[in-house]
Length: 306
Image (cartoon, rainbow, N blue to C red):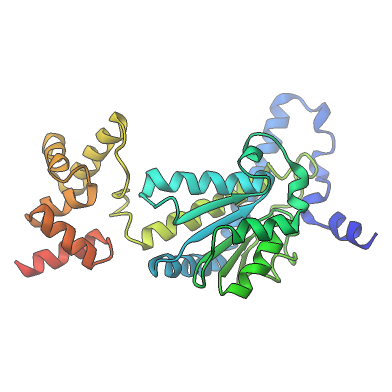
């Protein structure tokens, strides 16, 4: 009974008083109510800025040292982790082994609910250890309730290995908070549909993941200005986007940008540096490596040399 009481007291499991008659509302009023509730997710995430700063600092330092970052979750939380990790490869050219998502129930659970998987603590331990984590890596545990055994078991294992831990939840004072080095806990309040954490809680977790991963990528030099210069131009649409990025960054024409990209093997950063510093591809690659991928620093160095 004690465990049931703890679960019933979770913020994400409470009834939303403003939504108790949603089954009788006109569609316009129903949508208005959901829109109003969604705004609470944005505000709740903003209140966690200080914790997100710490999380970004931890993750950036780990990846800069060659460590890896793992996302772990179940259900909606797990799927959000998979989505974020998958999008980092084409957007920021992140190695698929550098940021990995681990989901309760495996890949099948992405498309079919395997709800009992979240209660399997031993599976959480084993799934995490199967990735061969090393000291200095980062584990991000994502659980709206803050109590998912699959995630908590992995966090316990991580702490003994010297792996840094970040928790993302929508319940303050949760079991997750006592295990993670840093916990980001946007409190969105009860859901419009009671307990359906795919709604406000899911939105808040997606916002936190977007902020965390994007801020880390920026710190790692994968953005120049506000341009995603480590993007992989793997199709016609993305090659046209790459041309516009180089043109915007350098003032070159799109035709000139296309020529630069072909010379650079469609590497956007190198094409920008070649244009801005009037250098060869080999020089651009060397100085970029020396400055850990940061385009601004690479250009400044080459201009200083000349």
